[in-house]
Length: 455
Ligand code: ATP
Image 1 (cartoon, rainbow, N blue to C red):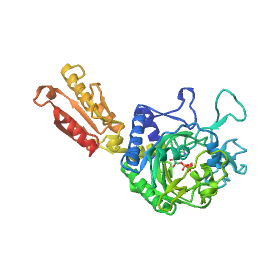
Image 2 (image 1 turned 180 degrees about the horizontal axis):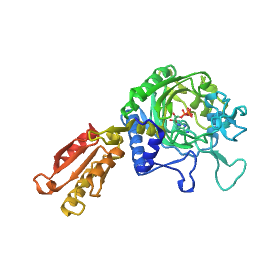
Image 3 (image 1 turned 60 degrees about the vertical axis):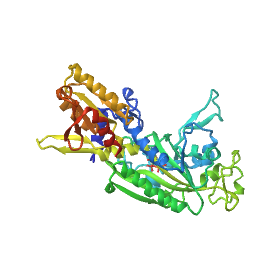
Image 4 (image 1 turned 60 degrees about the horizontal axis):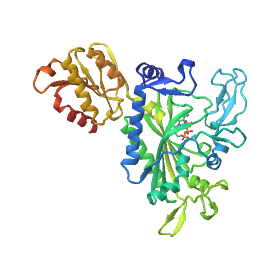
């Protein structure tokens, strides 16, 4: 794994994974742009999440709600009142700092001074105006989590799919938080993506499902290439528990800057649906909620056995896509001593996450038959739908291998003179991890590649 954030940051920029946002204007703190390879990696990680959370289960539906929503959503969700971090000012260096995890900081971590104010609450939501009239009422917020769009659509999803408990709604999308001190590359940023599942179940079955999701989510991260020794659980208690949570287990990962939260799995009880439902008094809610004077829908489901309407409990595994990508890159980053005394940098991504699946390189730049066969193979493999297959004609295969090691391309295919002269059109297939080369006939290449990526 990577030992320092610097080596990751520099590889990300050099090879086109991640760039500082607004770089040409001096940058923008807490905002990063994903480059040509970063977007592929991100899409692959999202697809892997969606596959396991939606397609491979028959009890989860997908959703894509709007980012900008009615401000009442945040009034009743509790974000307007409580979505805050404690903040202090340093009198000496004039910086503003986040007082971590509700513990007062006595020392400014910017300049070391002890001359700091008492902590005060800072709301992390971005406020924005909606429509051409700018007045007291025309504001809302950019969503600070995707979850609220799931709760507000609960009735729509139930009515359109006839779901009964237990079932879940999954969503991937952007969230925004005006973090006091964004830092550690893409670990803490102001605009990020979340992959969230809200899993609804009967009260009383919530603890069982909470355990289930904690373990299922950990296994998923292992399937993305993270290793057991770099993952830990943290059982969140007391003051650190969010206002809506009965219990939360954070899945922590050993990032280059330290052991920190990658995903949170919270038991949100009936707090959210209970907060957003109309006729709250009918349901005997277990959570303490604000009285809702605006909602027009009952967010409840019929319990057929007990023959009554019930507000389900909710278990939420909430993962950060950017943090996930950082963890996957950290883990994949490898520097290897080679026998000839040189070193090579390799990103040992799991094949399904690799930004480029196969690179096809003609040995000679300007030999038309070689070039034609290489292009034909590219088109054939591209049609398999595995992801990006790159035809790359630089005429320097050795350099190509090194470059593709560094961006984690699992397979390089070289088309050479044998390929156009010998029967069966043999091509050389080189493996990223073992660096072994084998010969495969052109006609057998699609089957070889499918077998490599699907199994
Ligand atoms: P932290 O304590 O690190 O601020 P949190 O507990 O506030 O995180 P949650 O509200 O549980 O985070 O959000 C769920 C997930 O969303 C987190 O586990 C993380 O992966 C991701 N996330 C939250 N805030 C950020 C951020 N500012 N930048 C990148 N990812 C984030």
